[in-house]
Length: 227
Ligand code: SF4
Image 1 (cartoon, protein in one colour):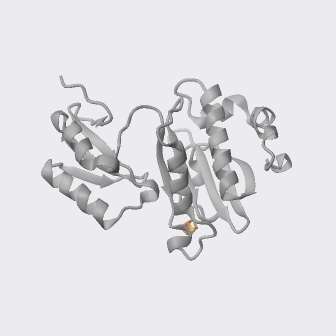
Image 2: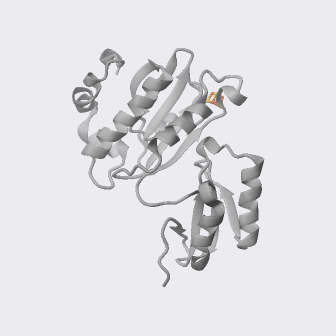
């Protein structure tokens, strides 16, 4: 049987799915035309917008996986193990009257910073432009929420069978501070989590006090009395 990497085996056990790379779900007309052309060329039976704001091309034959990756080029995001699965962004200041911060710009920036990094388990990131929280930031491994004073950063949230609300880690951060904190939290998680341990279970195991004493005290822009 042909070895297939970067694509997701489907429930039929013989065809594959390939995800697109579209931070915050932003696509151009050219992207959509290109994806549609690949779908037509390879007779891809299902194309769906996922909850992570990407498009999955599903039902691909094993022998077509490599050619589909090649044709999609940068529009494809190979699934090569535990990594950041998606950075979900809401409409933000670009398209929503409630937007306090530019969630689309922030989503793209974070995606660029974590591209290619691997982690003990999958990581999902939600960026919301205001406290209405349309990207469900409290239920993401990393959550960001925009306010008129800057960004709130949250860590350790999870949906699924055993939901957990993320811990708020810092408030009123600048864009650069928020990105720096996201990277520090993920590095700490990578260093100390067990294999396959999602951030929610990791935080339940170590507790917020350990995170404070071993990481947050070292970060100058964090007010520990608010954590
Ligand atoms: S979170 Fe706020 S800014 Fe983002 S789409 Fe929802 S209401 Fe708009």
